[in-house]
Image 1 (spheres, rainbow, N blue to C red):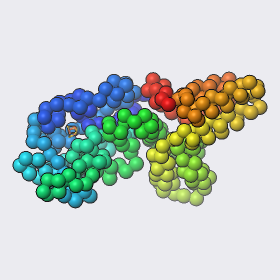
Image 2: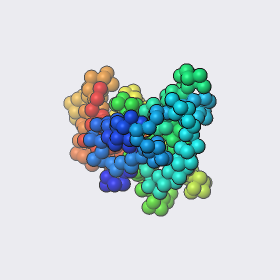
Image 3: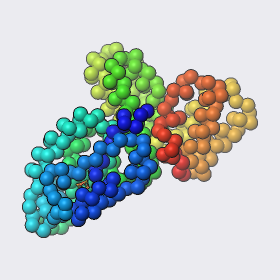
Image 4: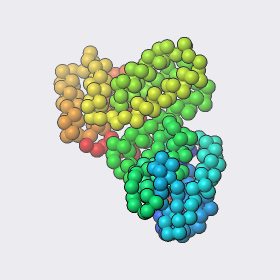
Length: 317
Ligand code: SF4
Protein backbone atom coordinates (compact mmCIF):
# COMPACT_ATOMS: atom_id res chain seq x y z
CA UNK A 1 0.00 0.00 0.00
CA UNK A 2 1.57 3.29 -1.07
CA UNK A 3 2.19 5.85 1.65
CA UNK A 4 0.48 8.67 -0.19
CA UNK A 5 -2.69 6.60 -0.14
CA UNK A 6 -2.96 6.82 3.63
CA UNK A 7 -3.64 10.44 4.45
CA UNK A 8 -4.24 11.28 8.09
CA UNK A 9 -5.14 14.70 9.41
CA UNK A 10 -3.20 15.89 12.44
CA UNK A 11 -3.07 18.89 14.78
CA UNK A 12 0.00 20.72 13.40
CA UNK A 13 1.69 21.27 16.76
CA UNK A 14 2.08 17.46 17.11
CA UNK A 15 4.42 17.51 14.10
CA UNK A 16 6.60 20.15 15.78
CA UNK A 17 5.13 23.26 14.15
CA UNK A 18 5.42 26.26 16.46
CA UNK A 19 1.79 27.26 16.34
CA UNK A 20 0.68 27.03 19.98
CA UNK A 21 -0.66 30.05 21.86
CA UNK A 22 2.74 30.47 23.55
CA UNK A 23 4.72 30.06 20.31
CA UNK A 24 5.77 26.51 21.16
CA UNK A 25 4.96 23.08 19.74
CA UNK A 26 4.04 19.65 21.07
CA UNK A 27 6.13 17.40 18.83
CA UNK A 28 5.15 13.76 19.20
CA UNK A 29 8.14 11.62 18.22
CA UNK A 30 6.15 8.43 17.68
CA UNK A 31 3.74 10.09 15.28
CA UNK A 32 6.38 11.99 13.32
CA UNK A 33 9.24 9.52 13.24
CA UNK A 34 7.73 6.04 13.63
CA UNK A 35 4.28 6.30 12.04
CA UNK A 36 5.28 9.18 9.74
CA UNK A 37 7.09 7.09 7.08
CA UNK A 38 3.96 4.99 6.53
CA UNK A 39 1.39 7.75 6.13
CA UNK A 40 1.01 11.19 4.61
CA UNK A 41 0.20 13.69 7.34
CA UNK A 42 -2.23 16.50 6.57
CA UNK A 43 -1.50 19.10 9.28
CA UNK A 44 -4.10 21.60 10.40
CA UNK A 45 -3.89 24.20 13.17
CA UNK A 46 -7.40 25.28 13.94
CA UNK A 47 -6.51 28.44 15.82
CA UNK A 48 -3.90 29.78 13.39
CA UNK A 49 -5.87 28.83 10.26
CA UNK A 50 -8.96 30.64 11.52
CA UNK A 51 -6.87 33.80 11.69
CA UNK A 52 -5.45 34.02 15.20
CA UNK A 53 -1.80 35.08 15.63
CA UNK A 54 1.16 33.29 17.23
CA UNK A 55 1.63 33.96 20.09
CA UNK A 56 -1.96 34.66 21.20
CA UNK A 57 -4.03 34.77 24.30
CA UNK A 58 -4.85 31.31 25.68
CA UNK A 59 -8.45 30.13 25.29
CA UNK A 60 -10.77 27.78 27.12
CA UNK A 61 -14.27 26.34 26.83
CA UNK A 62 -17.03 27.87 28.94
CA UNK A 63 -20.66 26.97 29.63
CA UNK A 64 -22.77 24.06 28.39
CA UNK A 65 -20.43 21.07 27.80
CA UNK A 66 -22.56 20.01 24.79
CA UNK A 67 -22.28 23.41 23.17
CA UNK A 68 -19.62 25.48 24.93
CA UNK A 69 -18.23 28.87 24.00
CA UNK A 70 -14.58 29.31 23.09
CA UNK A 71 -13.39 32.31 25.09
CA UNK A 72 -10.00 33.88 25.59
CA UNK A 73 -8.95 33.30 29.20
CA UNK A 74 -7.90 36.82 30.25
CA UNK A 75 -10.11 39.16 28.21
CA UNK A 76 -13.09 36.83 27.68
CA UNK A 77 -13.23 37.46 23.91
CA UNK A 78 -15.63 35.01 22.20
CA UNK A 79 -13.95 33.16 19.30
CA UNK A 80 -16.65 30.51 18.86
CA UNK A 81 -18.28 31.88 15.70
CA UNK A 82 -14.95 32.57 14.04
CA UNK A 83 -13.85 28.99 14.59
CA UNK A 84 -17.17 27.44 13.56
CA UNK A 85 -17.20 29.42 10.30
CA UNK A 86 -13.66 28.33 9.53
CA UNK A 87 -14.46 24.70 10.45
CA UNK A 88 -17.35 24.63 7.98
CA UNK A 89 -14.99 25.54 5.12
CA UNK A 90 -12.14 23.37 6.36
CA UNK A 91 -14.25 20.21 6.64
CA UNK A 92 -15.26 20.48 2.97
CA UNK A 93 -11.60 20.92 2.02
CA UNK A 94 -10.62 17.87 4.10
CA UNK A 95 -13.39 15.82 2.54
CA UNK A 96 -11.73 16.26 -0.87
CA UNK A 97 -8.44 14.96 0.56
CA UNK A 98 -9.87 11.51 1.23
CA UNK A 99 -8.56 11.22 4.80
CA UNK A 100 -8.30 7.85 6.54
CA UNK A 101 -8.18 9.29 10.06
CA UNK A 102 -7.28 12.23 12.29
CA UNK A 103 -4.97 12.61 15.30
CA UNK A 104 -6.01 15.47 17.58
CA UNK A 105 -4.01 17.30 20.22
CA UNK A 106 -5.40 16.18 23.57
CA UNK A 107 -7.03 18.62 26.00
CA UNK A 108 -7.04 21.53 23.51
CA UNK A 109 -10.23 23.67 23.58
CA UNK A 110 -10.14 23.69 19.77
CA UNK A 111 -8.68 20.28 18.90
CA UNK A 112 -9.25 17.97 21.90
CA UNK A 113 -11.55 15.04 21.09
CA UNK A 114 -12.57 14.15 24.65
CA UNK A 115 -11.99 15.11 28.28
CA UNK A 116 -11.35 18.83 27.52
CA UNK A 117 -12.01 21.06 30.54
CA UNK A 118 -15.20 23.12 30.32
CA UNK A 119 -15.37 26.01 32.80
CA UNK A 120 -18.33 27.62 34.51
CA UNK A 121 -18.87 31.37 33.81
CA UNK A 122 -17.28 31.93 37.21
CA UNK A 123 -14.09 30.25 36.03
CA UNK A 124 -14.38 26.86 37.74
CA UNK A 125 -13.44 23.72 35.73
CA UNK A 126 -16.80 21.98 35.94
CA UNK A 127 -17.21 19.46 33.10
CA UNK A 128 -15.29 17.50 30.50
CA UNK A 129 -16.14 18.19 26.88
CA UNK A 130 -14.91 18.25 23.27
CA UNK A 131 -12.90 20.94 21.48
CA UNK A 132 -14.85 23.10 19.00
CA UNK A 133 -13.15 21.85 15.82
CA UNK A 134 -12.86 18.24 17.02
CA UNK A 135 -16.62 18.13 17.68
CA UNK A 136 -17.44 19.56 14.24
CA UNK A 137 -14.99 17.09 12.63
CA UNK A 138 -16.43 14.04 14.38
CA UNK A 139 -19.99 15.06 13.51
CA UNK A 140 -19.03 15.56 9.85
CA UNK A 141 -17.00 12.29 9.60
CA UNK A 142 -18.67 10.02 12.18
CA UNK A 143 -16.99 6.81 11.02
CA UNK A 144 -13.48 8.09 10.37
CA UNK A 145 -10.87 6.76 12.86
CA UNK A 146 -9.89 9.52 15.30
CA UNK A 147 -7.61 9.57 18.32
CA UNK A 148 -5.52 11.98 20.34
CA UNK A 149 -1.79 11.70 20.97
CA UNK A 150 -2.31 11.14 24.70
CA UNK A 151 -4.49 8.07 24.18
CA UNK A 152 -2.15 6.82 21.45
CA UNK A 153 0.55 6.23 24.07
CA UNK A 154 -1.56 3.25 25.20
CA UNK A 155 -0.41 0.27 23.07
CA UNK A 156 -3.92 -1.22 22.80
CA UNK A 157 -5.54 2.05 21.68
CA UNK A 158 -2.63 2.70 19.33
CA UNK A 159 -2.97 -0.63 17.57
CA UNK A 160 -6.73 -0.25 17.43
CA UNK A 161 -6.49 3.18 15.79
CA UNK A 162 -3.84 2.22 13.22
CA UNK A 163 -5.67 -0.97 12.35
CA UNK A 164 -8.87 1.03 11.68
CA UNK A 165 -6.92 3.50 9.54
CA UNK A 166 -5.65 0.67 7.31
CA UNK A 167 -9.09 -0.94 7.12
CA UNK A 168 -10.54 2.44 6.15
CA UNK A 169 -8.00 2.78 3.34
CA UNK A 170 -8.91 -0.65 1.99
CA UNK A 171 -12.60 0.21 2.24
CA UNK A 172 -12.08 3.42 0.23
CA UNK A 173 -10.12 1.45 -2.39
CA UNK A 174 -12.99 -1.03 -2.63
CA UNK A 175 -15.53 1.80 -3.13
CA UNK A 176 -13.31 3.67 -5.63
CA UNK A 177 -12.94 0.51 -7.71
CA UNK A 178 -16.67 0.35 -8.18
CA UNK A 179 -17.69 -1.72 -5.18
CA UNK A 180 -19.66 -4.62 -6.64
CA UNK A 181 -21.34 -7.16 -4.36
CA UNK A 182 -18.73 -9.70 -5.47
CA UNK A 183 -16.01 -7.28 -4.28
CA UNK A 184 -17.84 -6.73 -0.99
CA UNK A 185 -17.88 -10.49 -0.39
CA UNK A 186 -14.15 -10.54 -1.07
CA UNK A 187 -13.49 -7.53 1.21
CA UNK A 188 -15.57 -9.17 3.93
CA UNK A 189 -13.83 -12.52 3.59
CA UNK A 190 -10.39 -10.88 3.90
CA UNK A 191 -11.40 -9.10 7.11
CA UNK A 192 -13.34 -11.91 8.80
CA UNK A 193 -10.76 -12.91 11.39
CA UNK A 194 -9.78 -9.30 12.05
CA UNK A 195 -13.38 -8.45 12.90
CA UNK A 196 -13.70 -11.65 14.96
CA UNK A 197 -10.71 -10.55 17.07
CA UNK A 198 -12.56 -7.34 17.98
CA UNK A 199 -16.13 -8.49 18.30
CA UNK A 200 -17.70 -11.91 17.64
CA UNK A 201 -21.13 -10.19 17.66
CA UNK A 202 -20.21 -7.79 14.85
CA UNK A 203 -18.56 -10.68 12.99
CA UNK A 204 -21.90 -12.56 13.00
CA UNK A 205 -23.95 -9.46 12.10
CA UNK A 206 -21.71 -8.64 9.13
CA UNK A 207 -21.82 -12.29 7.99
CA UNK A 208 -25.63 -12.18 7.93
CA UNK A 209 -25.64 -8.84 6.13
CA UNK A 210 -23.28 -10.08 3.40
CA UNK A 211 -25.24 -13.33 3.02
CA UNK A 212 -28.41 -11.31 2.32
CA UNK A 213 -26.62 -8.55 0.35
CA UNK A 214 -28.76 -8.99 -2.78
CA UNK A 215 -31.87 -7.90 -0.83
CA UNK A 216 -30.48 -4.37 -0.29
CA UNK A 217 -29.91 -1.35 -2.52
CA UNK A 218 -26.08 -1.05 -2.85
CA UNK A 219 -25.84 2.42 -1.22
CA UNK A 220 -27.81 1.28 1.81
CA UNK A 221 -25.89 -1.98 2.01
CA UNK A 222 -22.49 -0.26 1.99
CA UNK A 223 -23.50 2.39 4.53
CA UNK A 224 -24.84 -0.31 6.84
CA UNK A 225 -21.82 -2.57 6.34
CA UNK A 226 -19.28 0.18 7.01
CA UNK A 227 -21.02 1.45 10.13
CA UNK A 228 -21.25 -2.08 11.63
CA UNK A 229 -17.64 -2.78 10.62
CA UNK A 230 -16.29 0.39 12.24
CA UNK A 231 -18.43 -0.04 15.35
CA UNK A 232 -17.02 -3.56 15.74
CA UNK A 233 -13.41 -2.52 15.11
CA UNK A 234 -13.65 0.19 17.75
CA UNK A 235 -13.89 -2.57 20.34
CA UNK A 236 -10.50 -3.57 21.66
CA UNK A 237 -9.09 -6.94 20.53
CA UNK A 238 -8.42 -8.36 24.00
CA UNK A 239 -6.06 -11.22 24.83
CA UNK A 240 -9.06 -13.52 25.27
CA UNK A 241 -10.57 -12.61 21.89
CA UNK A 242 -7.18 -12.93 20.15
CA UNK A 243 -6.63 -16.32 21.78
CA UNK A 244 -9.95 -17.54 20.38
CA UNK A 245 -8.94 -16.40 16.89
CA UNK A 246 -5.50 -18.04 17.18
CA UNK A 247 -7.10 -21.33 18.23
CA UNK A 248 -9.57 -21.00 15.37
CA UNK A 249 -6.66 -20.56 12.91
CA UNK A 250 -4.84 -23.53 14.45
CA UNK A 251 -7.90 -25.65 13.64
CA UNK A 252 -7.11 -25.26 9.91
CA UNK A 253 -3.91 -27.26 10.36
CA UNK A 254 -5.23 -30.17 12.37
CA UNK A 255 -4.47 -32.65 9.58
CA UNK A 256 -1.07 -31.24 8.61
CA UNK A 257 0.77 -30.60 11.86
CA UNK A 258 2.67 -33.32 13.71
CA UNK A 259 1.89 -33.96 17.38
CA UNK A 260 5.06 -32.05 18.31
CA UNK A 261 4.14 -29.06 16.15
CA UNK A 262 0.62 -28.99 17.61
CA UNK A 263 2.03 -29.14 21.14
CA UNK A 264 4.46 -26.31 20.43
CA UNK A 265 1.74 -24.16 18.86
CA UNK A 266 -0.63 -24.78 21.77
CA UNK A 267 2.13 -23.83 24.22
CA UNK A 268 2.88 -20.61 22.32
CA UNK A 269 -0.82 -19.66 22.21
CA UNK A 270 -1.11 -20.57 25.91
CA UNK A 271 1.88 -18.38 26.80
CA UNK A 272 0.34 -15.50 24.90
CA UNK A 273 -2.94 -16.06 26.75
CA UNK A 274 -1.07 -15.94 30.09
CA UNK A 275 0.57 -12.64 29.12
CA UNK A 276 4.07 -14.14 28.93
CA UNK A 277 4.76 -13.34 25.29
CA UNK A 278 3.40 -10.78 22.79
CA UNK A 279 0.81 -11.53 20.13
CA UNK A 280 3.43 -11.32 17.39
CA UNK A 281 4.96 -14.65 18.50
CA UNK A 282 1.96 -16.95 17.78
CA UNK A 283 1.18 -14.82 14.71
CA UNK A 284 4.65 -15.40 13.21
CA UNK A 285 4.39 -19.14 13.86
CA UNK A 286 0.94 -19.31 12.30
CA UNK A 287 2.06 -17.24 9.31
CA UNK A 288 4.82 -19.78 8.81
CA UNK A 289 2.28 -22.64 8.64
CA UNK A 290 0.00 -20.63 6.37
CA UNK A 291 2.89 -20.25 3.91
CA UNK A 292 4.14 -23.79 4.31
CA UNK A 293 0.72 -25.41 3.74
CA UNK A 294 -0.48 -22.74 1.34
CA UNK A 295 -3.81 -22.37 3.15
CA UNK A 296 -5.88 -20.16 0.77
CA UNK A 297 -8.48 -18.78 3.21
CA UNK A 298 -5.86 -17.86 5.81
CA UNK A 299 -3.48 -16.39 3.23
CA UNK A 300 -5.95 -13.61 2.52
CA UNK A 301 -6.70 -12.78 6.16
CA UNK A 302 -5.61 -9.25 7.12
CA UNK A 303 -5.64 -10.43 10.73
CA UNK A 304 -2.27 -12.07 10.11
CA UNK A 305 -0.86 -8.91 8.54
CA UNK A 306 -2.97 -5.87 9.45
CA UNK A 307 -0.29 -3.12 9.35
CA UNK A 308 3.45 -2.74 8.60
CA UNK A 309 5.64 -4.94 10.81
CA UNK A 310 8.00 -1.99 11.41
CA UNK A 311 5.35 -0.34 13.58
CA UNK A 312 5.73 -3.26 16.02
CA UNK A 313 2.17 -2.83 17.23
CA UNK A 314 1.83 -6.44 18.36
CA UNK A 315 5.17 -6.66 20.11
CA UNK A 316 4.04 -5.72 23.60
CA UNK A 317 2.74 -7.91 26.46
S1 SF4 B 1 -3.85 22.14 19.60
FE1 SF4 B 1 -4.70 22.56 17.59
S2 SF4 B 1 -5.16 24.72 17.63
FE2 SF4 B 1 -3.79 24.35 19.34
S3 SF4 B 1 -1.75 24.74 18.53
FE3 SF4 B 1 -2.12 22.58 18.28
S4 SF4 B 1 -2.91 22.42 16.21
FE4 SF4 B 1 -3.11 24.56 16.79
